Image (cartoon, rainbow, N blue to C red):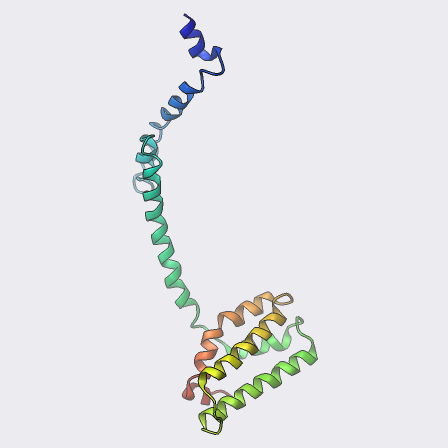
Amino acid sequence: MAGLVTGCAGVPGTPPDPPVREVAAPAPPVPPTSAPDKSEPKPAPPSAKAPAASKAPAAPAAAPRKPEAAPPVTAKPGGSPPLDLESLEQRLKETNAIGLMTKLSLKNQVDDLQEQFRDYYQGRLKTTLAELRQLYELLLMKTLSLLQDGDPALAKAINGSREAIWAILSDRDKFSKLP
């Protein structure tokens, strides 16, 4: 009878062992989650097997995550093609994040960089495309630092267009079509 009393929650020290077994017992109600095998067939078997539960969840959890990681990688290249230089230029003119004098200074630096590209393509500038890339990156970083607090959406749009803009600048034919 003493065994029955202690097993029935008479002593708080002994009941923890049976509740652990009872926690394993609620695992069979998990098979109702295995009934919708179409969505989650893998989580039900690991929870039914308490000893192998630590090993089984790691493998099923990794398998669904890997396919999830693959689509964002393919989504990134699809997100970079849209580029509207005129829109970015207009947004730079209209933003309140940069003062008038700073905007004029940036415009002059952009014009100077474009002139250096023209000279480079005409053979009048003794520099490399790699050096022009450094100048481009510095100007871009300066612009982003000016925008990051006052107009983060514009800073993100410009940063997202970084490679597309460079693709235009570094291609003689595309560059020649710029206004």
